[in-house]
Length: 276
Image (cartoon, rainbow, N blue to C red; front, top):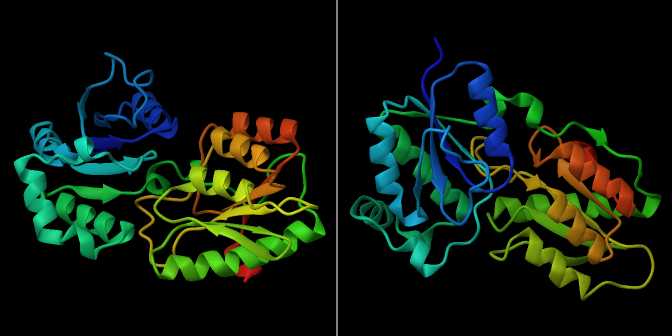
């Protein structure tokens, strides 16, 4: 019998896919929905859940223990928290004090969080261990294919993104005609795209590449895109988007690819090793 699953739900539709999987397979589950991130439309009264702020992680730990959860998946996008979101409960304050927030990047904090959860006697799983079909496949996914210039830009973007990942800076890079227009930092992918739209050069548009950091745990924070990413890329004049094949997720994949086709952008999964 499958162990009870705790779902820590961020934004996007992927948490819903996981919830539906549990329902369809009669797997017992409980949802910790993150305020300001998880979609209230996807978390209704038929779903066993509790809403918490990011700063209430201790409350979440306690609820998972009360529900006798044995395995945990953290899935969905998390926006940069406000100061209000970060006001900690006592358990979370102790966690922040222990890890030293200022000394860790995103990956360090996530690794510390995984360790903390597993210290509570639960096992952290990745979405790829439960629903591997959600991971993006290699190749062009829609009707639009990258040009020769776009392929060259993809290679440059992969090179830069891989090195940035080693430094735990970000997952995304935008390159146009061989020039790096921007790299993802604390602002997130959406703001990166908007900012780079202001730097666009004449001629063929650039490419957005998102890859998993070399040291990144597959269980948390996989590179993700969705229809909002595609719309923003179009508005910024980009030619297309590439995501790390087998290591990234597309929210509402069919709808996202349909929008990309409509707007004339390519979307593809790439084998990073082939582009280095």
